[in-house]
Length: 598
Ligand SMILES: C[S@@+](CC[C@H](N)C(=O)[O-])C[C@H]1O[C@@H](n2cnc3c(N)ncnc32)[C@H](O)[C@@H]1O
Image (tube, rainbow, N blue to C red; front, side):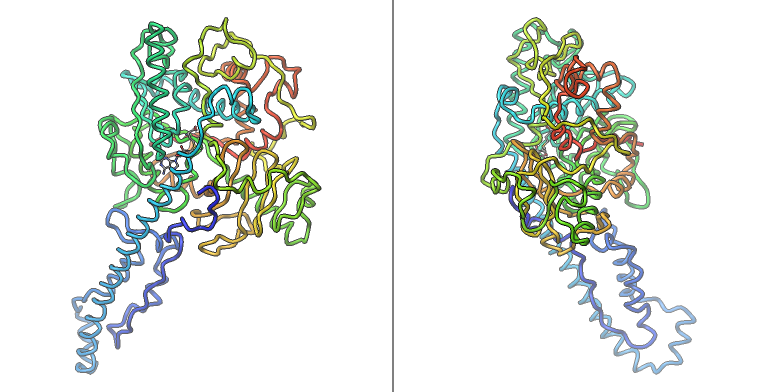
């Protein structure tokens, strides 16, 4: 999967289904014409969408209506009586038979399509699982000392913590405690962040498609419980997760589960908490949240983009999110920002048609595309490594994961400097965080952008562009889009608007972390789809903006210091920022969001 941009995993739901040609019927019985049937189809998505809840897309209903024998109205009878009866009767009966056969054939084709789609989804899901299962667990020590992207890891962790802090406030927590569902929880790296939520969860349910990751998450949790018991409950009665020493341990359950392609209602504990299978469009209403039951928060960190492979998966994901949330519950997450992608694709395509060489359009020399021309003489040492599917890859999830180590003492006396700064599980606002910020020599101040996102071209570019690909990035991350989607042959949009919003595959690689295909999540399309499932937007910010705004908050600012994002010494580096500009550029590819369940 890591090197698969052949599009072979793209289910054919992304390809418009050919409209079936039907036999002409003679005389008046021929109405409505095929043309009117075609124009009655509301949009391209409706044609591609498999029927949900037994409802067929409008166009198909139209087709079915035309094939149904009509009860003759008086006026129709009159008009028939003026027509030669024998000419109408025989072709009418024949046409009916033909229609029935055509209808049967169409249904069979649809069934086959659905079966094919289902099996291909499984394949795609399996490939994702395979990729993440293959990710080595390098350990906290490696991340702390050897990782070249410590600053980025810390920033990602802090942003996830910030979302958790902001949107799991006591006002949404019921008396029996907060219930959290982590969809695509990876190795359970966010368990420690939940411990520091304003209301520590009473129940955490983590699901992921990668079984090895789920095993690691279970081990992580069990180890923490064990150590906490060994310490006599010190460090938080909730198995070391709680902030209140006498609170009962946080109960956690982990499941191997495809959270986009399969309903979560098949998990007993999810059923027990409450799952509403009727959310989303269907029968003309949007199913609301449950008045009682349901999770208080659903979290989806660095994973939602996998669901935008197809409309079916995206809807499946939202159905699960909305179905699991209680009324008033929150859906939080982080994912790639399509505004950054759109702006960069548009700019690079314009530069390309203006005949500019890569980088010229931006005054820089780092963005390139096409046939892998050398870029400003930058070193190309990493070359094909970034495209090697065999190359062991660590996940972004790992980069994004907490560096929680149950072995580590939470005693502030035993922690210091960078070590302590990397221990956000043992967050202690009193503990100073010091250490030289990992600045690059040419680091520049943070750029202010209108929406907090940045399409800043990279500062350096040691990796080669792929043949026929539009590529940008810097020495730690790289995005690569094929000029045309392999399966659909759809070219990259010159206006930067991805329509339809599903199936736009690109390749993403991050130093030490990810090397895998992903899918664009066009923001507006996603937002309006989310509304269909009763999810209203509360918060959306690019990572740069999250940092600039939220680090002003006294508590979150302290947390940034504790997590190695900021130094207490504001004269160090760029106002104390411990994230290099290249890391910040990589981070600016993402944005954070929170929705509210109505
Ligand atoms: C980048 S990792 C993020 C892990 C974790 N949320 C974090 O922030 O550390 C992406 C995760 O999404 C999971 N994933 C991808 N597709 C999935 C699906 N259909 N169902 C469940 N998990 C999925 C992967 O297995 C992987 O663990």
